[in-house]
Amino acid sequence: MKTPLLDEALALDAADPLAGERSLFAIPRDTNGKEVAYFTGNSLGLMPHAARDAVKQELDDWATLAVDAHLHGANPWFAYHERFRETGARLVGARPGEVVMMNGLTANLHLMLASFYQPRGIRTKILVEDALFPSDDYAVESHLAHRGLDPREHTIRLAPRAGEDTLRTEDIVGSIERVGDTLALVMLAAVQYRTGQWFDMPAITAAGHGVGAMVGWDCAHAAGNVPLQLHDCDADFAVWCGYKYCNAGPGAIAGCFVHERHGDNPDIPRLAGWWGNDPATRFKMESGFVPRPGADGWQLSNPPILAMAPLAASLEIFDRVGMAALREKSLKLTGFLERAVLGVAPGARIITPSDPAQRGCQLSIAFGERARAVRDALQAQGVVADFREPDIVRLAPVPLYNTFADCARAAAAIAEVTGKALA
Ligand SMILES: *Cc1c(COP(=O)(O)O)cnc(C)c1O
Image (cartoon, rainbow, N blue to C red; front, side):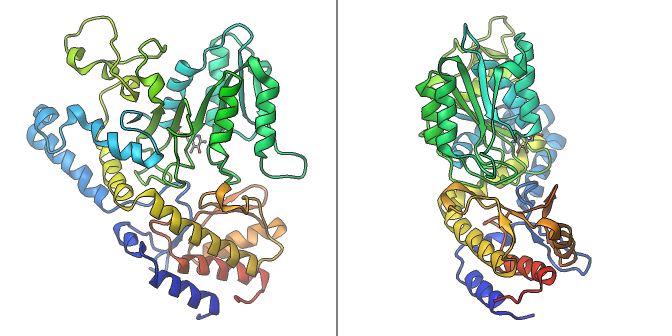
């Protein structure tokens, strides 16, 4: 059905310089054979068609070259992770050598906590958010338990003020200053998974360093979504996964950032493996770990090539388009969705900050008692969204493959529940 909102959306799509990128992705179809409006790229990003060929290439090299593909494959396996040295760094605003793609997110978080959580004397505490993602919570708790420290006593948990949904920067900084020289580590999500809030990373990192603590960021919902500046914001470490906005497939290989001031310090304690050892001596099979410089020195095992191939296909797209151009479209797309949703559901409460500088593309919308009806209407109209108890619908318009028309379609489905016209 043509509506003023859809007309506007179609005009915006026609003028969108990134509109062509959508054709690089496989878009699932609904039961009527129509492409869905996919708003859950914050959970599992869509498949770049090139991922298929990238995996096939490695299977073919395995079939035809076997062990020789380590040195003579199309993308020699021996140095496979180095394919991401530049592209991985550019994705998150890091310098080459500060980023390595390896393992899963939680595994990388454990490796980083082993290195950067070093309780000494009274400096034992870890500051986190109360609404921490469970896996991060378990990781932090287990590191405290590992050092014989009671997690309840040594974890500071930040919650929003009464009646508010998100944390204020001044409150986070105030807490850091209050914990002061008992604070060993600040570990926060860069973009909060439930509210979509993007924290003020430079200010919080500076506050942590100001009291002598380390600062690490979980960028699971930030990498590939917002233009991160991990080097310039001076983070000590960061981790992220490859399957959300990074579009590298289910359970994809994850990212890890170590600031260069630590990467070249062989004295940082770490859990080591042979792939983090200097490649010149790796095959001498001698004892005595000699880390290779940079984030590469935290690698454990030889990389799972079949799992890394889709990441190469995906990062090629990010690198060609660039985070700056993606952000520019993302601001327009998310702003359009926000306006469209509020237009048809004036009573809905968007708990994501309305300030575009404090969010990426995700909008978390509290629909109150109409939440389930909205979820059902979205589903019936081929709009893929995610529902969180008690009443939150999360919609993440992703600039690489979502359209303004997708946003109009979501608004039309919501309008069926609220009975409002699409103005
Ligand atoms: C998605 C997500 C995870 C998931 O962890 P995996 O190790 O990738 O399974 C962890 N933490 C946060 C904050 C997340 O958003």
